[in-house]
Image (tube, rainbow, N blue to C red):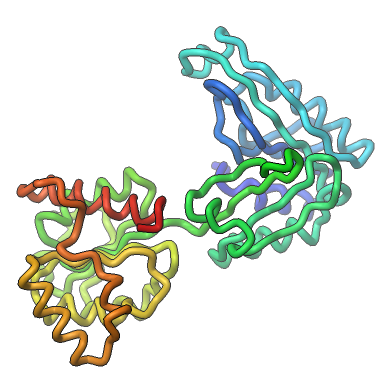
Amino acid sequence: MTDITDMPRLALDWHRAGRRVAIATVVETWGSAPRAVGSQLVIDADGAMEGSVSGGCVEGAVIVEAIEALEDGKSRVLEFGVSDDEAFAVGLACGGEIKVLVEPAGTALPVSVLENLVAARAATRPVAYVADLQGGPPHLSGTTEYPDRFRLDRSGIEEDGRTFVAIHNPPLRMIIVGAVHIAQALVPMARACGYAPVIIDPRAAFGSAERFPGETIIEDWPDAAMAALTPDARTAVVTLTHDPKLDDPAIMAVLRSDIFYLGCLGSTRTHAKRVARLQEAGFSAEEIARIHAPVGLDLGGRQPAEIAVSVMAEVTQALRQGA
């Protein structure tokens, strides 16, 4: 099976195998477009394809244009209207319009740029692929040039109308310390929101496969587990044990890291004691202020699932709004 989330890797593999390859990318949509901005289709000179730019509505026309692009070596921007009937066939209520950029690899899309993009994705480094819709050479950019797009995972065309920015972020992760009832509700919510959850709990009775079927469970002390997991800027950490012997080492291990969210279960009084321990351990007031405690948005929930909802809401707010 082809991983449709890794079209750059597939295009590079096909190119290295001697196949002439073009990449088609959705760069703009209006209305109920079948596929999101950034969706890609890889096409070779024989018309073989993988991926999707419209769920089947306009792939045939894109393939024809891609083969022509491989002949003349030039990129092109295509615009399509998706009728209501075509949209209904791929599961949408109404039609829309899409704009697609087609780039032949080796000419309009230099192989060196494609190789560097694939390498950055493999190393889970955030990178932006920047293309000129008027035919200029593409290049890669880091997070400083398009910080809002990286934070929102939002590819799209800049205000100049000609610069398309495709965001390639590393996967989102949520590290949960404490295999408690709240975690049982939080893990599926995190997964549904696009996170890869990891549970840390040295207590085998808590972190059992029966309580968390199919999930990654690390039965180690939190500080050692954190060192192995290397949390990064695409990681949220939530501590739920209520036990300073477990929560504190995890907090201290990540408080000076690049994680975008750190939430800790406990009452206001519990957190005040936590703050005192962290201050005694040498952490500054600014560093400690990174902690969201009591964890979660104040939705008034009391049951484990309700608390999990509030945690997931606050994590989403921190990711999307930088709160």
